[in-house]
Length: 112
Length: 494
Image (cartoon, rainbow over all chains, first blue to last red; front, side, top):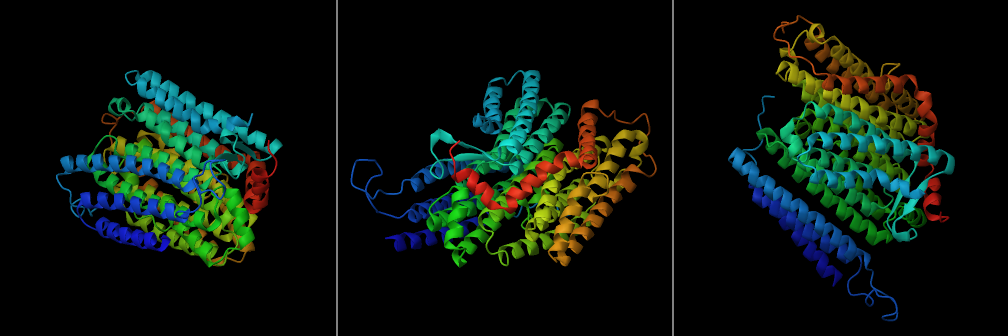
């Protein structure tokens, strides 16, 4: 199971890398979103999948599942949600003001 | 009474939230934010002195004993950095009062400055690696807002790159954390260090450590600094000054913490790599600093050079060189804030950004011009200013260790720093006065006072280095002997 998930993470990372290398800014943002999904899965897998029972004391005989990765992922999801919302607004504002969503056009002047 | 070490994080956040509701009352916002920063500075002085008498302080949140809960740990190194960061922010706030403009102040400028400081202080104080990630994100989100605030075209253009780069480096941080957690099964830094020491730092852990090196190098601008000059020269002066003074230092702090506390077993791989990266950073930073005519670009490349210099102290890794680096970090926070404020003020006064288009400012603004001379000497490490002690100690440590190439690079870079800033000084401050007294823009007191305060800071830090020396040597001692930190965290329940 773990191997399968790791391969999935690899595929997600490859897709995200492809997206983030493109010129269109919306694709770059989607790339960062896919990146964050990949790493959340990675953290989950690192804690071990389907091992032990629910992490509630006295509910079952040990061993319990490690609950920490879930807590970490929850925090990471909230953060990536906020950041993605911010960069979407930023991209929209930049598109309005600069009139382009192409990153090559946003390179800035070279004469400085 | 260990609860006090959470205040440098909590106080700015609480006040920041309060200030959001006080949006129309700009005067009140100014007073409250300045008082908060002065308060945090006083608290950190108190913490620093308590650490000297009682040893490292820690606070276990929710009563969860380490290694299970999240905790804050204050040793001399973190307390010194919290103190310097708070003082520099307070002084930059004074500059902001008369420079940033009402449009920014109405758009929650002060709350975001406070959130930024909260993130910075949290990163210095936390003893948990995942909490470090969270504090980084608090700091970065505030910095994203501050870098775009105002919505100038250049700001929007540069901030997209800045945000994407930082999202990517946060992603690497999470990957590194996941691998580390999968390997050692804990996130408490002291506990990680203990487990790494027990298991031995094998190839897998060394690889993880290099992932951390990449992450923190991106934040610190060590070698991977391509994003830095653009995004530090786009925002308004005071924000650029805060970024130049604080943000890279957080990355540097994280590098020092991880590579002295956790991954110190394979110096032939990791510390050599840091040394090579620091050397290349110095060379490329020096090229940048002499290549441009835009004064903000020159200041940004000076940030890069300083990063390379501080990390030589870590790469060498002797107690003397660590001590020198700590001195230098403190000095650099003050001097870089001062440099950015000076350069920004020059642009405001003359209306041009290139130094060969300015001339003879010393006739128009004498005190201001001499302050530029002070910061030039300070950054070049000329005694008796503050840069000197750090440079001497880093050099001494590197010679003890036989790293002659790094010593040579470090001191050549000092000469280049001197050259790059003297070029500005000779062209725009000396030379023929081209601004006639009638056209001269008045230099507001509110802009001059913070610069003079920082100037006094760098001079007194150089003259009175003995006052700091006991704190700094304690900080270097803790960094050099990780067992002190580990014992303070894992044994004994205060």
